[in-house]
Each structure stands twice: as C-alpha cells, then as structure tokens.
Length: 196
Image (tube, rainbow, N blue to C red; front, side):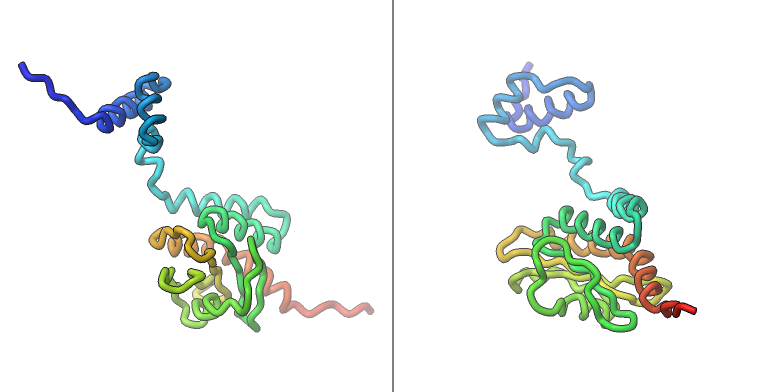
C-alpha cells in the first residue's frame, strides 16, 4: 500500500485547522515550521479574514451611539474608519447649505477636499485611483434620499490599499454618519433665541 506524502505547507495547514477545531494549542513541529518558513498566516482561519459588512456597520454604529453628542460621534467614526482603512487622513464634510469640513482624522488634509466635493456633487462614490498619488476615495453621505455631505480618505504615496474594501468601508461609514451629520446641520440652521 502506498502512503501519500503531502507537501509540508499543506500538512501544517491541516494541523492548524485541526487545532482550531479541537480548541488546542499548535504542536511544536507546526510552530517550528511556521517560524522557519514565515508561514504565520496558516494558523488563522480563512473565515476570520473575510470582511463582514454587517459587523463593520455595527462597529461604526456602536461608536456613534455611545458618543455624548453628534460632533463627537462624527469624530469617533472618522477615527475608526481611518484605523480600519489604514489611511493617512479621513475627512467628513457637509454640503447641505454650504460646504464645510466637520471632522478630520489623522494627518491634516492639504488643500481643498475636492474628492469629497466631487462625491457629494455627483451623488456617487469616487473609487480609489491607484495611478494618482496620494490615492484617495470618497462616498456621499445621504439622509432621506438627500446628499448632505461626504466622507473621504487619503493614503500616503506608495501605501498598500485594498481597492475593493476601501469603497465598501467608506459606504458603510457614510451610513453610520448620516444621522449625526443631519443633526449637526439641523442644529446650525436653528435660529438662536434672543433674550427677552
């Protein structure tokens, strides 16, 4: 009877999967192979690496709902988005009555955020264009079928960008930002009460 001999990488992958299923630590042979070959990603579940948009939306909503006010909610969602995208800068703008910047997370945004204005003006997302440095992308923020702003991200030159994930994350963040941006706009339009 002939015994099949599998390649070492496949053997390690199988042992790592069995360890996860059985809830036990990796054996020393598997750990030493991973250390010597640099195949550390083999121990992670491939399902854990899949993006789950519902989980991402929940994380943005949780950050927004636990904030003491809408301005802080917008700032915190911007910081979380910057972290998830590994962007140099995330900017959140409003465009309802006049164009204005509500929040900047990360490095300062040099110049006007044209990509944000473009997304809000056209009411469509602007995907990552890796041929332009610094790379940037944007998504309009909609509330009740009206575009009220945009969220945009910019990466440093040469940064590795997941061009499929970035527009999705921007869209998810725009959903979580919509109510907070609307509240800020409504507050700014309210007339101030004159003392009597």
